[in-house]
Every structure is written in structure tokens, then in C-alpha cells.
Length: 114
Image 1 (cartoon, rainbow, N blue to C red):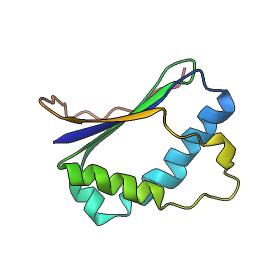
Image 2: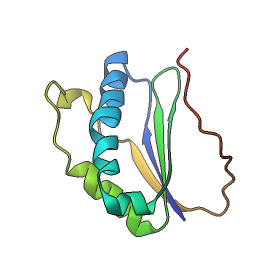
Image 3: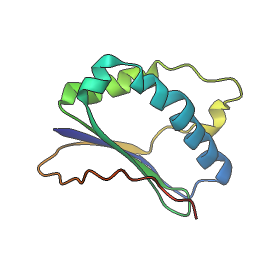
Image 4: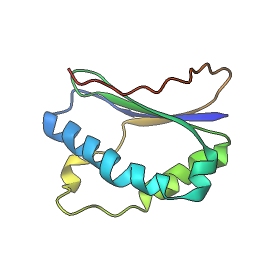
């Protein structure tokens, strides 16, 4: 299993965080879910955010080629009406890892906004 961590360093404004959230939820996640190859490769995705807007997106796939596929799908999505490219910043860094160990439970997790 392989993982990629995409870092967006903070602080980030509420407008940038909102644009990032919308892009992920309304454009990127549906594009990934629509791709059969991605569904076969995908293990887990976590979106981590700190109060000042820093964010890390962790994607785990069965193979490293699965991570390449994620990048290909994301980069080929078209902006939605109303998306402002100026608010959609490039990541500050991207790192790849081989997953040495993973523990999960069967209970789904849904974040609760504070």
C-alpha cells in the first residue's frame, strides 16, 4: 500500500479554506468516485485541517500507480462555475510513502464542525 500526503501550509484565509473545501467536495471527490480504476485502487482518504487553515490530505492506494492515477484525475478536472482559481492554491509540498502498517475499525467517521 502507498500513501501520498499533500500539504497546504497555514495560515490560510477563511475564503481559501472554503474554496478548497468546495473543490474537494463538489469537484474532486465526485471525479475520483466516478473512475472505476480509482475505486479499485482506493483504500482511504483523510483531510486534516488545523484552526489556522493549514491542511494535509492523505490518500492511500493499493499501488503507487494508484497515486499517479489520483493526480491524473485531479489535474484533469475542470473548474466549476463560480470557482476562483486565485483561491485554489498549489500545495506547499507533496510526499509519498510506503505504508508499513495500518489499523482500521469498521465504524465510519464523520467530522463534526465546531
